Length: 173
Image 1 (cartoon, rainbow, N blue to C red):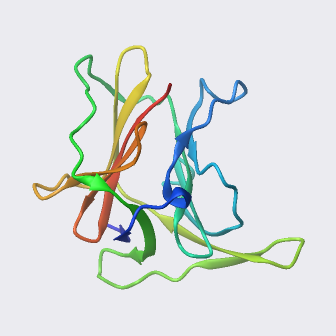
Image 2: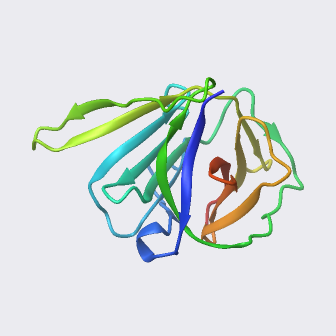
C-alpha cells in the first residue's frame, strides 16, 4: 500500500487550513485551504480524485478537498474531535509505494510556464461521518497505535504516525 510521507515543522500561518464555505460545493466537498493563496507546486491525487492535497513551492500543505458523501461512508453519531498533541505544518516529502520505493511524479506545465508535480496514490480510504455530516474522520490505509493528531486549525486535524500521513479529522463551521 502506498504512503504519503510528510515532515512536521513549526506551525505558521501558511500551514493553517480553514474550512472554505462555498455555496457551490458545500454539499459535495469538504474544502480546507490556507487564507493566503500561493502557487500550487505539488499535488497528491488520492484514489482517482476521491481526495486531493495541494502543496506550495515550500512543500507546505495549503489546500485539501475530499468528497462529502460516499456509498461506503460509515455513520457514527458519537464522532468527536480527537485530542491533539500540538500544532504543526505538514511538509510533503513524497509517496512511497508498497515495495518501499519513492514514486516519481508526472509533471504538468501550466499556460504561464510554471509546472505542477502530480502524484497519484491508491490506498484504502475509510470515511466516518456524523449523521448530519458536519464532521468526518478520513483514514488512509491501516490505523496505527502510534498515531497522533496534529492541529492545522480548529476545524482541521491531521493524523500522523512518524513520517506518514494517515488521514484527517475535519469539521465545517
